[in-house]
View 1 (cartoon, rainbow, N blue to C red):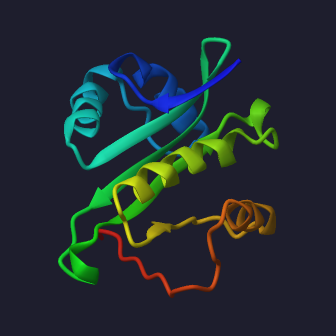
View 2 (view 1 turned 60 degrees about the vertical axis):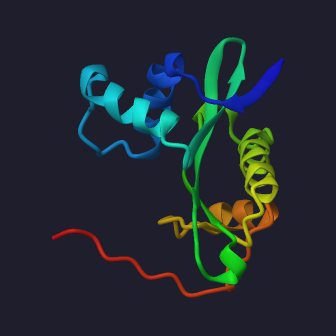
Length: 147
């Protein structure tokens, strides 16, 4: 049975294991260093990590940030980041299901739009996001990273 829900404090190790698949070249973050960040994510009121659990194991996740906004009639917008599904559970609908739960929360919060960016150039990844309702050519996205 699949359970898709907002993450809890106890989900940190499972989410970190998923993130190892998302960004395998990142330095390994130990639980002690991760716990205050995880606590801030869970309690900020602006961010909600979602997880899909199958048989007691976290197999998919994404994080939704709802950003207050003064334009668009003071309607917030959403940003989805860190979308990942365990390699053994891809192409099963779990990634799309987790995204849908995040989108449902954004629409209930009256967000006027939800943004999602990917660094992937793989056509299969881009089609996955399009299949979840995101438009590839809706806006131009720019990024700058700290030098």
